[in-house]
Length: 357
Ligand SMILES: Cc1cc2nc3c(=O)[nH]c(=O)nc-3n(C[C@H](O)[C@H](O)[C@H](O)COP(=O)(O)O)c2cc1C
Image (cartoon, rainbow, N blue to C red):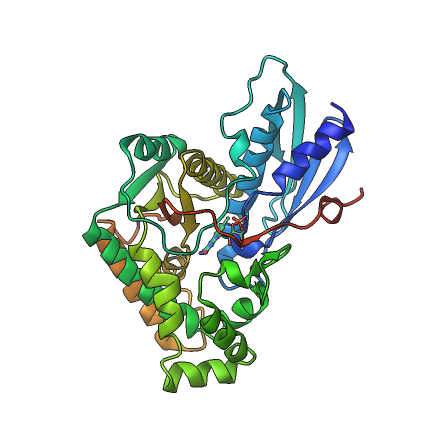
């Protein structure tokens, strides 16, 4: 394989999604047929990176993107975890084998088109072809539960509304929100640009001002109903205005790093399949993440009432999904038809993602 082909594969791989666009990976070229992916996670400073699992899901999405990208150049790729047990800094070795008879994966052209849509979408129902394609895309190890009716979407919208209250009043989440938004931007290489957040320009200006300090945020939340406008725009309305909500449930509990990687591969196939079928998607992971905290009895905030709210959220989520407390929820998203967002996260340049040996 030429250097040029490897560069093209890595250029495409960069477009894999990661929570808050953190891109928790760096590439090392070992030889012309082998690369090492140096993964990392952000659990030390990002509340949502529960035990690093959202980053691990992103690693899986990246490895699946590499596989699909390689297929476009007549290559098969294999990966294995090459590091020890430390899942804070996992390494993955990826080898490429020439296979001229390999056809490009049908999802190849969706790699660069896929992007998150955080704004309200049309409520046009999924076609049976779209629904089946999404169900098939998650693969045999996962089940997909779909919430489609007006009543189900209303229940999920209320869940998102409650989850957003925890998110916006949690002092531990504040530094994350402050850091990850690139204000007044349409594109961002390493964060989320303001215009892709999903609020109107006036709310964005207010948020920028309020989020300068936690004391401003808590004053606003307490006395001026500060969570209302963002919760309506970012959670409740998008929760109603979509075709469906999708919940991926693993058939057996993820216990090791590889299980989370396989989940990430499944998530990326599902997201690319949505793109292929003309749909947009937004992950909405906070109810899942607060449930991870609540069900493992981990008190994530100095404000004890937030843990109680996370427990209540978990109960509601389980009611909506007809699930037991011990059932695993792994990935939650909404899908629908919409115009392509005019603002999006872009990526670090490849030269900044490649590290030398
Ligand atoms: C594991 C994971 C969790 C995510 N959680 C959320 C979420 O809760 N809300 C959201 O709006 N986007 C979420 N995203 C989407 C990322 O923010 C998005 O993929 C990233 O900013 C890059 O943007 P792009 O997908 O448009 O390329 C998540 C993505 C991944 C991979």
